[in-house]
Amino acid sequence: MNIEFYLNTMRIFIEICFDGTAYCGWQKQPNASSVQQTLEERWSELFNIPVTLLGCGRTDTGVHASQFFVHHDVLNEDYYDRLTVAKLNAVLPADIAVKQLFKVEDHFHARFDANKRSYIYRCTSIKNPFNRHFTFYYPLIREMTLEDLQEAAELLFAVDSYQSFTKTNSGVEHYHCQLYEAQWVKTPDGLEFHISANRFLRGMVRLIVGMCFNYALGKISKSQILEDMKLGTQIQKSWSVPAEGLTLEKVAYPIPMEILSADFRI
Image (cartoon, rainbow, N blue to C red; front, side, top):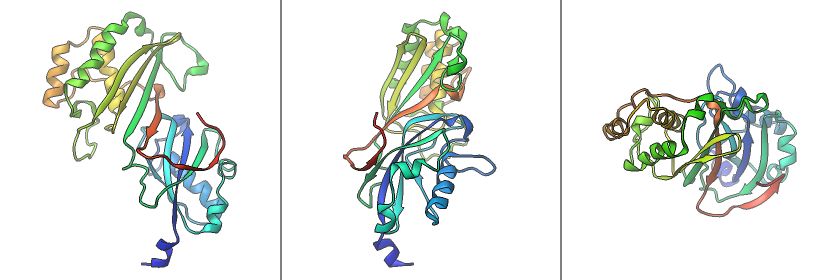
């Protein structure tokens, strides 16, 4: 082990956003293009050194992120001084952008120190080709009421383990999540589902939205949903809604970070 290498490293956080349409998600996968692979390859070429990034979580194929954090251990001060938002963005494709760079303590971890993640699922009954990559077009939402959708969402707070809302073979140690918000909101073009928690299981949000839709359409009863959730079994008539409507909106950390470089802020 090269002890000098570790003594000279400095950790930075990189805030990015991306349109996930063309990617298999954040994490590298064999025989598929990912956001992580794209960033690491482009920045390795830019700085002529291997670049390894660790993200704040995983996103599924086709899911977007308005805010996503990665951390990177910078090797030395010369390299550190060359890092700017403009330079990193210059080599990225149009569907990925760097927003800000932050200086953090060496022990600060993009994934394990995040204490709140917030998603929005967008759907509409109005067909619009300009929104097709970011909103799920579903004419049947005209037959749903906001009250029924919210009633289904409120059922989520009856448990703290969400095995009923995860893909099979997800490989997690437990299914516990601390849910902070589950709210349906009416918009001029359709509906949005806002959900926040300390962590999410693989495919969890899309399965929850599918459950809400099925309840609002009368395809499943409240008692059936509650029974499945308490048993940890798959929800009857389980439906994972399409990925294009889902965006990771915000990732929160318990301490402030020092901004090194910024292009824009939201």
